[in-house]
Image (cartoon, rainbow, N blue to C red; front, side, top):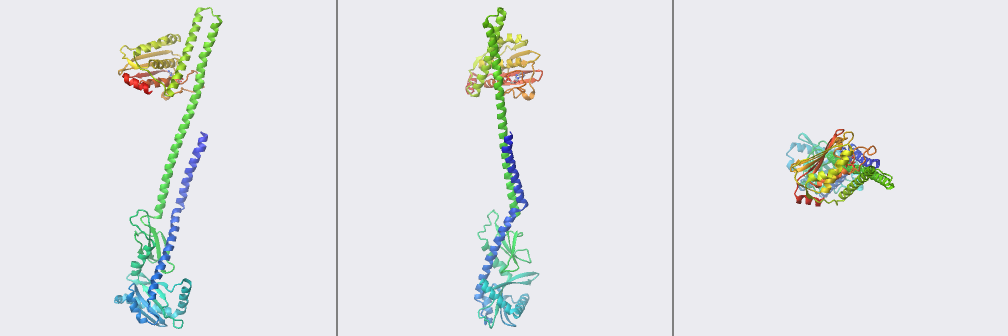
Length: 542
Ligand code: ADP
């Protein structure tokens, strides 16, 4: 048991405890959320790069078609070819800035105001810092190979601030002596309706809105507002779980990502829950397995103990009659006993002891046949009354000599029953022997046979030591003996009742006991009436 505890229970318990604490740590440290965070930070960084590249491509294409430094009057044509651009301007020297805007929006006074403030802002900028701008754009060209400088502009439309993206560059024809600057402006509408939706879907391609697995969805918002300016397909509202501010092309815009239909915390909880469940189920299985093993081991232990008790009991049982037989036979052999009565007594003892031996050996042989499945019964139509009477007859004298009051009640109206005579006689003798063995001061033996439900009942009654209620179901088990074998003063093999039960069941009957400690016991065999065929079939199968 100690080995079992140490070898199986401890590792199993350790495994469960480690599993639970591991899961707890994962939950406490929000490890799964952290993995998602890291993972999606990277996704956003890559997304930003791709979006930037796309913006540069589009701007490059527009810059290539932008009027040359001395063709300020071409701005209108440029705007007509680029409807996505709202304003375009050209700075040709201090105080000289030319700005054109999409003509169909000029009727709007707000728009007109926006155009004028834009012209004055960039006009001043270039007037004051033209050298800085030259240096900045040059550095960009050298370091990054880019001609365009992206910046942002906030304009108020109604009650809202709107984001515009401004591209600044030096147009074709700008020289070191006469530096010129140019720029054009992408409006919010273009960014939110066209540029970003396309760019975001390109960043997260293969979106399948029917897929039930959580998929990442991405959005872009301005730093001033939480609602998305644009989002990828399948965006299902809510706030992004990981965000990243644009660093290069779109200053003031923020990229956000989340999982459609769920959150990192949900996934983490689900993970923990399913792991706890698995752990629980495995623990239960393990516990069940251990319980079964424990029970099996315990049963094997008990059986091993019973067997060893059995061996010591049987050897004792064999030794006692043999010793007696030898003693009396030797005494007789010496011829010293002249008293014929005494001699007769010795012969009787020898006979009785050899009968005891025979019945013990028969029990053991029967038991071994039953255990190996080789026990066969031969059923014959029998007058049970006759069988019981003749079986008890040879014992009556002995029983009464032992000081027993012997009462035999056999009914007259008994039916004939199909039985194996020898087996039934042996069952009866086992019960009678027990009654005699386990009687103390009040020596009474009753054998009653009467009709019951068409069959018969055979009762063996004593007023002996009785059997405690909790032992009663166990006494029919093989090798089982009530009490501690070391303090047992009545020897036995523990086989008798198990044989009785087996024999009676083979007859389709039942054996039971009613008993009270100190009061006595009543063993009842019930034999049903069965047809010859049924009995024969049963006999074969046993
Ligand atoms: P045993 O060889 O020990 O008598 P049995 O199988 O015949 O084996 O009986 C099993 C146990 O049941 C006995 O050891 C005894 O404790 C108990 N027992 C059987 N018959 C009686 C009885 N008539 N009165 C009290 N105890 C009994």
